[in-house]
Image (cartoon, rainbow, N blue to C red; front, side, top):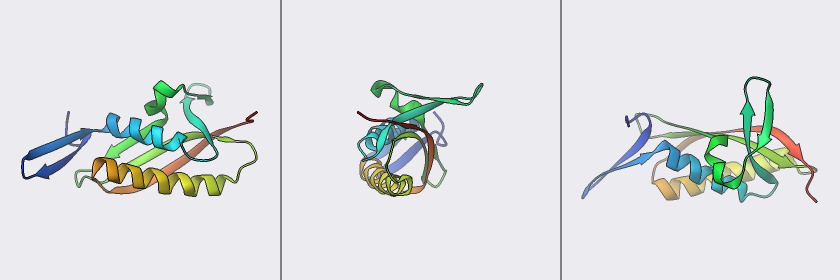
Length: 123
């Protein structure tokens, strides 16, 4: 695992290395807790179709990049609920995920990109 794939924190007891997959899974779990988010989306690049991911596959709808300065960039591919304000959902999502990731990992989140891949009607 290279340092570009993980965040490194230096403590008085040694180094802590956090893999980007761990951050991706936590970001996906945090994202689906937000109002208006139905779930994470997986995009099939071949035909451009988005599908709703199961709860155990949340990290597949999330892209995480960690710079050499230990700053995190997160891409969230989501499916929203029909009838909600996408801008309100995105603002809530960005704030919630940023706060939770910074508290969880102890590393700063530099940017969160939200990609709305679909809309679902909720019963």
